[in-house]
Figure 1 (cartoon, rainbow, N blue to C red):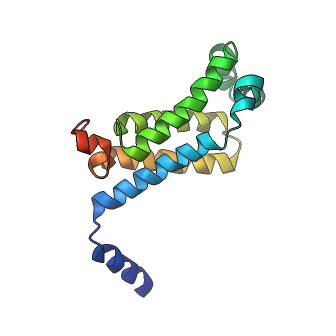
Figure 2: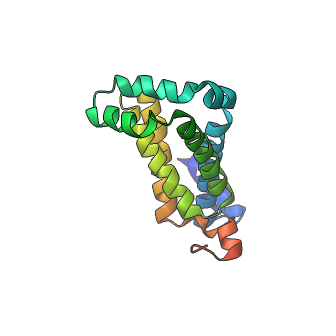
Length: 161
């Protein structure tokens, strides 16, 4: 307990309060999205369609019919376009959240993508943990207006920043 209290006093001694810690949480989430974008093999996703092919294999054996049907109707007919949508959505979300530009929009988009990933990967506990944490951080950042500090929104006085 003493260690925790000393860490809190260190945080206070540098003059940071709730808005700064929320900004750090927001920036960390944005960097997480950027890493998700960065680790993808873009050549494989765009030229060979590996990402969408992998997602199809998951959807085909999914235990919920709505996931199979939804994937077959929305994603499967347009694999190349959907590969670009997924990859560049992660980039846009990551940039928006990290730099705090149109932050509520980026956070809502990230939350939506996490929910979609969550339902697609319902059987994979590792993915569930990651998507649950990212979704929870998104909700906290939206409700606490984490774009109030260290953000382009705040500098430009847009979207409540």
